[in-house]
Image (cartoon, rainbow, N blue to C red; front, side):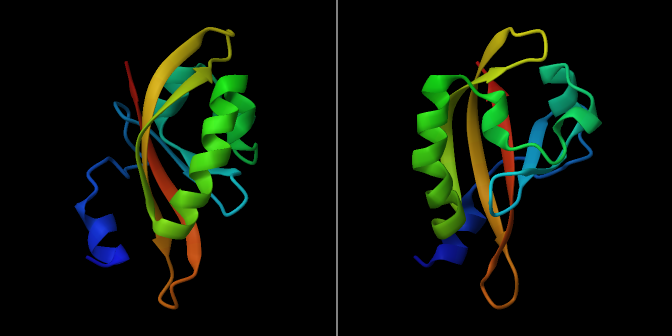
Length: 121
């Protein structure tokens, strides 16, 4: 099975307009490009407080290592599945999530961005 087939078999929300789903998109460096209204609701932040920030700024130390290990897989292989993370909300409450992500590539196969959904629990 090739990379595109593997990516296409992943099921998660990539709808950045969703009020119900916790979805974000990152650039090559891990900077947040966009988040869904559901992401903002779950974390307590305003859009202007997160766009342009690095995703790791919203993680606890334990999760930082997991992202450092998994983000290269997401960029290079096109997906990660159910990575357990701790997200630090604006009110400093830590929430446990599982992150599933898919990468988007341009027509030449060059990485453009990620689409990641986090599920609480």
